Length: 284
Image 1 (cartoon, rainbow, N blue to C red):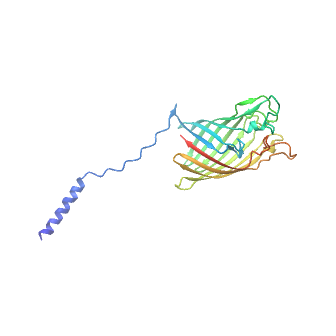
Image 2: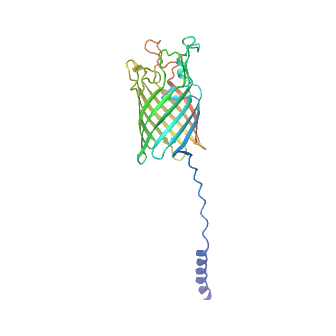
Image 3: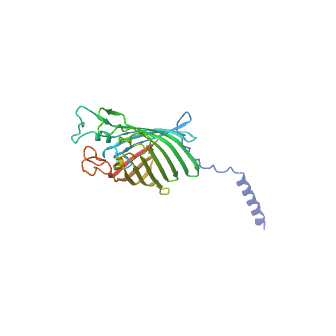
């Protein structure tokens, strides 16, 4: 009988001792990543990219050769942003060569090996996962322009309006400069593109899809209009994004006479058509 009296007392004492014992320490939380550097309230971010070639709206800007690119972004908490980007290019130089890779006119040079982009605007997150983006984009091609035959200086200015929801975005761009990438009297040329970047759960894989339509303005410029598509896949690994994509642009290499180049460069190659591209991008 004494045992039955002792057990309740022992149980109560053990419970009291457990209640007074210090709690086990909680697992240490992972340290938060440091905030990006800032300039006058603008967060500074950017990317660097290397790729098998530079594709812009379905067109190879490097004639199928490798590319190195960089971008720097200044983003304000209010939604305003300013950015600049650099890439090697060859398309304009290629247009001003003959098949022997010499200037069209002896002693003259019209070439540009660098693309410099300046753009800025405002992004408004007006609802959960919804963003409105409005801004202006300036494409510059520092180079030498001793003699321009058919094409004008390729510098181009576009205004754009974009709407995105989660992994889908729709963007409308309109040329507000006199020429569009060297095509004269092309003010009002438009580009509409729908892009999708669908994440596959927590795997780090993302499916990519895109469709775009270029519609040239100006008398006789409709021959330059075309449609482009892209399908691809990307994977993020330790801060690097690896992407493999297939692109197609239904560009005409030559006009109906078979002689006048449209999207054929001086070597006779269509800078549109079907292409495969591999890129590696690092964000910082």
